[in-house]
Image (spheres, one colour):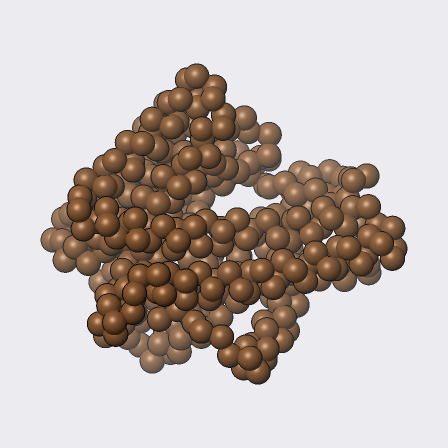
Length: 360
């Protein structure tokens, strides 16, 4: 029987990322073309919201749980680990590569035919969120190693991954060896994914442990952020010397613990809500379109902004958000959504015409 709450968490985490990109990306026009920035760099205290809305740690956690369940079902069917991993990589990589190919073709055509030197900057901005998909595919490729660590060392694997991520931060921040920080793309996100293997054990813990996990993560976040070593924002902020996301720091481990505790504290309420007929329909719709929405949301955003700028001119070079900017946030979500839905529809038609294997 499928866990409705898992499906909900996986879909909502992706949609949260999409809405954040739409609503809180400020694009300013420079001589080199569009340049992104964030209201977090101009609004004091807004970074605290990222502790709730930077949900990629939660997505990787839920992904680890889903991969473990899918592997168990594959074993029952007699599927080998190689075939299992390749099938999942293909299901994720093919649409991502197709999208990349289309945008590279658009970039080359516009640059060649119309001599628009900043078009490649647009292509980069549209495709940049796909870094998440690359990391996810990497974790799928490393699934045989993760499963072996889980069988052989159980929870000790999490401690090793967390400790290694902390050591990487020490080397990077204390001894200024910047390149070593990129190892945390594997260690931190690998830890979040590996933690998902323990999902069922976390669910059956007594209620008081849910609050213990939540407060452990929350105090960890406060301690690390207010130590002065790490920024408070869980997303990159233009102008900050250090980002907790590029590459991820040990702070993301504390964020993961906090978010695991939070979703478990909310579980009884959300499970009751998701049993309601209307919420069931919402959940099914959200799950059906969450991944296509993530893949194509920057394409829809680019089209919407292109139409807007064509009608009303390019944006101001001043990136600071004013009152009007905040009042326009609903339009900043509705506009890209309107232009993203047709792209998803076209993609869905292609899939029906040429069906491809999907993850089990």
